[in-house]
Image (cartoon, rainbow, N blue to C red; front, side, top):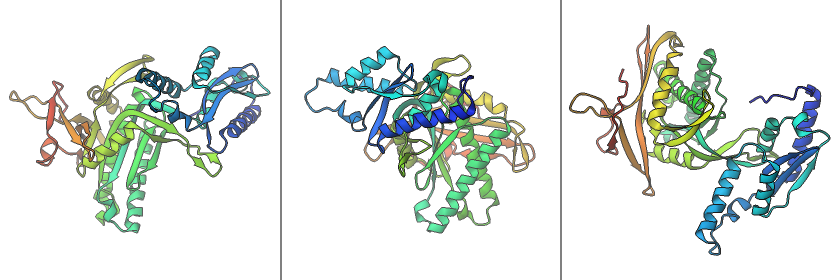
Amino acid sequence: MAYPAPATVSETHLRENIILLDQALYALWNLGDNLIFAWTPEARGLRVLVAPHQMLTEYALDDGRLPPEELARRARLLDNLLSNQEHLDAQAFDAVSEDLGVKPRFISLPFSPEKGLGLPLIAAIAARYGVRLVEDRAVILFDAVGFSLLTPLQQVVQLNSLSCSVNAAYAKLLDREININFARTTTGDGFYIWNRMRGVEANVELYQLMQFILADNALAHERATRPESVPRLRACFHVGSHYEFYQSEGLNPTSFSYLVGQVTIELARMIERAEPGQILVGKFNTMMRDETSGEDVRIDSLDFVERTRAPLRSLNGLKLAGSEVDEIACYLTGRRDASGLWGISEYQVADKHGRIHRVYNAKINIHRRNGEPIYLGLREEDLPPDAPRTTAETDLLPLHA
C-alpha cells in the first residue's frame, strides 16, 4: 500500500527519514522481545510505549487478585489500544501509559514527524513492530481434499496448481481494474487468503477472488490428463476478529503480516466439516467501513452475499478458458417452502471440542457465452444425509440460476 509523502520532502530525504525511524524502532524492538504498543508525535520525534510482548497476557491475567469488572476493563483497554491503527493524541497517550504502568521512551528525530514522513507512513512503519487487533476483515481458507494421502511430489504439484489458480484469478480481476492487495499463508494442505485492505468493498473483492480461484481450479480439472495433479478443493469464507503480527525472520520482522485469532479458528473448524467441493460461509454480524458513505455499517452474512451480486455484473464479458462470461450468480442455498419460494438454510457445525459454529452453504454458477457453465459448490440436495440439519430459515430469496 502506498502512502502519500509530504510535498516538501524529496524522495531521497524521504528514504533517509524512513531508515532513521526504522532503525530507532528496530533497536527498541530488541529482536522481537519488545512490542510497540502506542506512539504520539512530538515536535522533533516520537514518544512511544515499549514493553515486553508478555505484557499482552500479563496485564489482563486472571490471577485471583483482580475483581471481574477490573479484568473486563483491562481487556477492553487492550482491545481498543490494539485495534487503533493510528497515533494517540498526547492526552490519550499519557492516560494509556499510566494505566499500563509503562514509562514512555523518546525517539529523537532530525525532522518533524508530520513534515518529514507523514503520520500514515509512520503508522505503517510502526505496525511491523507491534500487534494489531482487526475485527472486520474477511478471510478465505482453501483446503485440498485427501492431501495427506498423496506422495510428497504430488503434494508439491497440487500446491503449485492452487498457487497458479490464485495468480490466474488475481490477473482476471486486474483486467477489470480490481486491484486486491491480498496476502496468503499456507496451512500445509491449503492457504489462508485475505485482503490487506479493509471495509465492505475490500471484503466483497475478496469474495470475487475466491469465486475465480475456484473457477480456475475447476477448469484446471477439465484440462488435466492426470486428476491427482490438480487439488479438489473445499472452501470457507468468514469475517471476524484476529490479531495481525509480524514474525521474526532472521534478525528482522517480516515484511508481510500473519493472522491468528477467532476468524482463523472458526475457519479451521468449518473446513473440518466441509464436504469435498463445498463452499461454506460463516455466520457473522459485524461493523464494516462503507467506502461509499465513509461510515461504519453493520453487515451480516446474508446482507454481505446480497452485496456481492451487483459488483459481479461488472465482470460480465470477462473471459474464462476462451469463453466470455454472461452471468455470475452467487447465493446461499436453502429449502423450497410449500408455496414454491426458496429460503436460506442456516446450519450448525459441531467441532471436535463440542463447540457449535453456524454456517451457510454457498453456490456459485458461472454461465459462459460459448462454453459450458461452471457450477461451484454443492446444492442443498447434494449434501449427505448426515449433514448438520437446518436450524433456521430466513425469508430472503436466493437467486437460483
